[in-house]
Length: 175
Length: 115
Picture 1 (tube, rainbow over the protein chains, first blue to last red):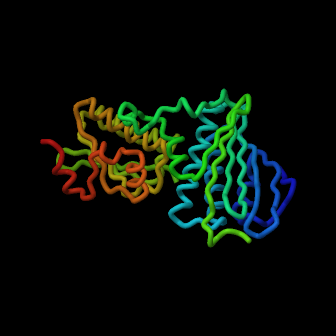
Picture 2: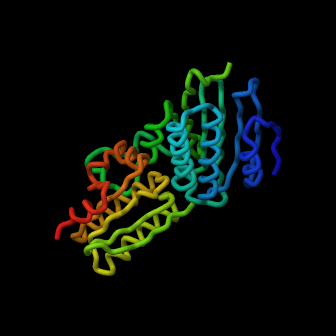
């Protein structure tokens, strides 16, 4: 596995880790030292979920988010990855999850896509409703929305792409 | 770090000391199996000590809810002890904090179970 563009924009610990990933594509450095873009194509496995979460945590730290916000971003991304692997691709080994992490001057943008049957966000039950409060599942999308500033769904035919956006703190924004 | 469970008995209450991460997969299954084992042995008063839980995701939250309803449906009680700030905040956000009986002192928790 090789990167098309090798850069030092991400921590060395992350680079050494992602070198072990199943497949990766298109990592591109942007203009200044606080921006970066990286994307990966991964198996539909819990191992991929853990690695996507780990990458999100490191990107959030690098983007300057505080110690309370970083775990929230990592959790939201983990939930999106779980949705893609479990509910989207149903652990199907022939299907993949694509995860991209882009740090711009004002935001951290994470996109997670699967090759599943598609997800209609309007049909997701409200987990806070009294009739749902004791359900054993169904809180993932709710937590994603709670922890991110913007969450967008896009149908891919087949599949779903979730875009998660967290605005960087002004003092930490790039120039 | 995977989740670990240690079981002990105090005054007829089964305390499960949990540590690590409660996430989709191993952590959630471990809790499910541990609670089932306790119920199978005839005890239905369970205190989940979450003091050493470093992380919990939506699957883990769902597993706590399922454990709560399973024990309640068996006529027993399941309470939570020593929530970390992260777990406390998640239960607040998901409106589950008031669903669970949450304690921060073991002795108080033990004495709160019905005799």
